[in-house]
Image (cartoon, rainbow, N blue to C red; front, side, top):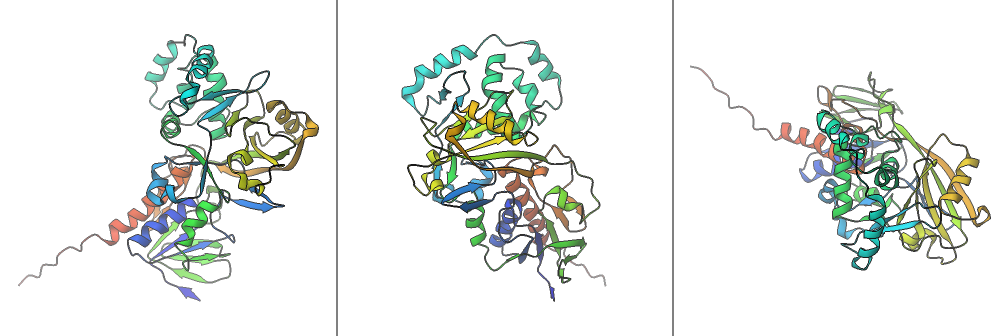
Length: 400
């Protein structure tokens, strides 16, 4: 069987869904071909024994501009995190709140910052200004060492899964602005609820369990042997999957580990993320059931936490590091799942987004390692198609 949509989109992750959304509102015919049985790509959730378990620790930043363009964030069933973070201390974790949003914490925030704001190394400013492409590490070097080690470094190690902080400084500034201007949230039904809501608006145009095995200009071949003829093809898949479709050499993706665990008691006073110290294989710890009680089916006796971590560390080391990070006895934690999200985050790439005649790429690796980057890449791919198709035809002149 041969299908002939105007645009064939490979992949129903956030980039592919975004591309489809913008094509739909511009009345351009499309079909999505997704290898798995659900939308979302790496944004995935499973429900086990009354628990909602996301594929690693992910959150929605409500101030992401691309997300706000794609869907009405205010209409999503979101549960907001506390506007602040826990900093690791030798005793109980220390809470650093945003005093603009929690006015009663202003004095405590000032006391905490007073211990972190020392005189910075001003030579770092000169090095930063002289670099044409400064990194997150270069940006962090502008801060006093205690502030970097307790807040900035752990925060962006967790966000980028890159202990060396080699990503662009522009991305760090962008994320900091989103955190300061908006809230971080979890959907009531898990992170997969977000792509599912977007996919619902595209029902009838997403073909699940349809894996693409080869692509050429104007033609897509699926695993079952069928062909798709299309004027445009948008490849919204992870870089490793492109290897079997195209002769491209893209930078490898970063993997990130995660731990889901149940505690016998509540470990956090407020639903804020804990930033583990830089030397720990644990990156961040989030009290999932405190943020959204739906993650434990509203059972007050169950306390679910999720940690992001170094994917190369052994389970035994992770157990010890997690109990130390949350200041809890090992017997009080029940480890539900230890896993690795392979190809979780892209490395820096200069890949062009159009690789052949009417063959486009879409994915966060083209923009930034974030949901915002994935959505933006999908929008831009759709806009490339829209501009071409809506371009007015040149007037013909006939001599004689």
